[in-house]
Length: 502
View 1 (cartoon, one colour):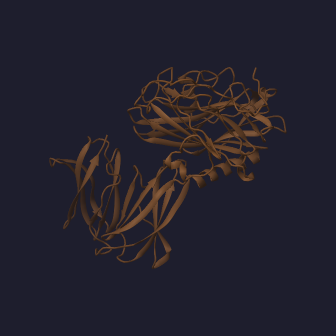
View 2 (cartoon, helix red, strand yellow):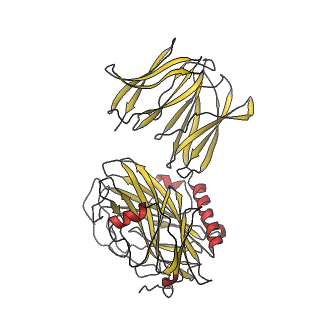
View 3 (cartoon, one colour):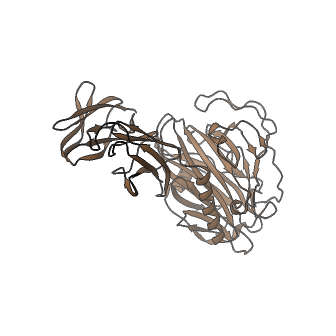
């Protein structure tokens, strides 16, 4: 039987001595800790206990309540899972929270307003309202072994009335597995007890499909609704389990978080609910970023309002693009940007000072690849000032714009000139985009050669109209190395270098 504590005091977790030996994969051994406490998100109405081993709540109960610290308990316990099937057998780091935790304490960095336990990472200093920071790894994953992840959790909560009914968790997972992960899933799995220890067996599960938000409620009018929402990532599965079907193996957890189903439960029981984001691609050495909100509300309508407020607040704090700038080059304008989130792709829009109301989409197809991005707009007139906006296309279809950036086109080339641009990205891993511009219509050949002069691919050939063009080139079949790509017309020829990595 679950026992929900009414206390709001801090639970002390004692860890003595130095834990583990130095480990290059995970960044070294953990420091010694003596009497370190957990952090309580208590800035607003909805509060949660956050522990350094990547779980929320208290194994003795009393994980969270709404409204206020003396309100109705809603969370018994919750945990974070990360899974992949890259080894042929599913591996999931992060255990079901009732048993020994699989996350290993690498650094316990906890802060709140007015206090700092350690210096915040540089990318955190310019953000606001961050309430806590945890950094752990998965070296303790037991069943099928660790994946090789170092995980950061950034927790946020606000005290103003518009934003005090949710807590936001942003996760960054550094892939130190030694291989690219093409099917990485992240899942929050929570045992909500709506109404506390006396009524946890009368809970129900619903799904808001518009927001991809699973939520729980019970049949008491004065008890809240609680739910989970993906803020940054790809909502994939809303899963449920009861006390007889707890996911206690990697295979069960993997099956739940990757099913693609959105499960509701109309029969009352002691339900658990999970929300996963994926599949994500994370190359070796890269970081995957996702974010979730744990939301509460007086009723379903209020829960939806709070979930939308959490989404808007997150993207107000964490802009998806850190840098977006342009410069004039000969006969063209070069645009550069570096996102700090994972997107499906990008679009560029341009207006000229001479025609301020006429917006033109610059790219023919969605711009994809790896950061940093570079795009050459050759369809410009010399000495004309242009305003550019960058549109991000999210993994779930959402769109946001950044800019404008003003650039006065330079150079002495005519508006329609023969231009072969650098590929982006370069170096390329799986694919790259080649942009070129033609002064007049005609037949072209765009070909790729190795350094010995052997042709390895024909990217494009045939009749093309004058003006700018883009083509996608799949580099996946090429071995790592340096190649030359050549654009040939009846009167012109240009060659540039392309690097391919693996």
